[in-house]
Image (cartoon, rainbow, N blue to C red; front, side, top):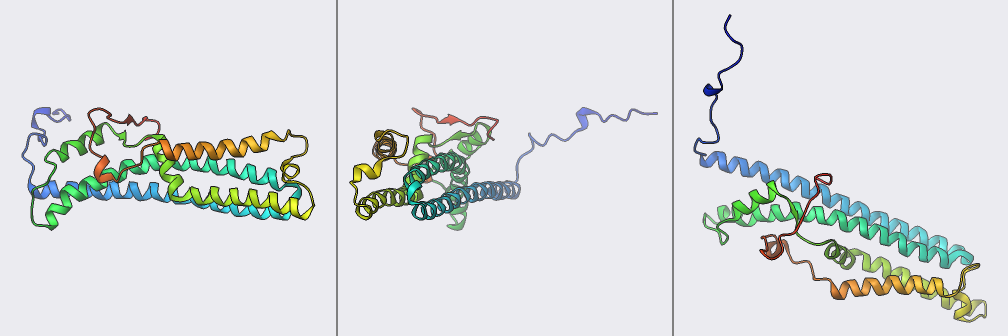
Amino acid sequence: MGSMKSDAGSRPDYESAPLKRTEYIAALTHLYRAEMYRAQSWRSRLDTTTNWAILATASILTFAFHNPEYSQQTLIAGMYVNLIFLLLEARRFRFFDVWRARVRMLEENFYGPILRRDPGTSERDWGDHVADDLLHPKFKISFWQAIKARLLRNYIYVFGLLWLAWLGRLFAVSAGADITATEALRVRGIPLLIPVVMVAALYLALLLLIIITPKVLPPEKCYWPDPTHLGEDISSLDV
């Protein structure tokens, strides 16, 4: 009987065969669909985290104003719970930005020229950049930039509402119970400075983050590799 193994030399060498235009377009079409799906998947995760923050804030405000004795502890806890949501959403935004950048690369340099009936593109080596990003994916923005982006996009309203509720609670308690604002700040069994420091430190840190951290640029401007800063590698565990 003859050998059941096929001769390795008889295998077609697809890599060295010339790639037809139709095959090239079909491959990029499937790649675009896959990257768009990934971007939409991570986008839905961003929306999920934001919804958690909104629902948590609504519950915290309801509980705080229906239980004045525990309102200050509840509001401060709500601020830090939303900080956790913000950090989680920033991490997810970094992954979303990776897929978004690839989608924009394809849209700007492949689909755009096709629709204009002009095969030329302003970035001649865009295909090499996409290939490098597929083989060695990197985050395009830092974690701090991601925090700033999500804070200015959504969470600034959440933190602003909690801060106004905290201040309003102080004035309401001091006016209704005929006590000073300082006495209204006190939490039973905790020194007076602790709740004040916790609120002040959180909001000061968020303000400094907004002022100091560089703004996240649109993907069309920041997805090309920067020779001086190639970006942070994506851990294989995260991918």
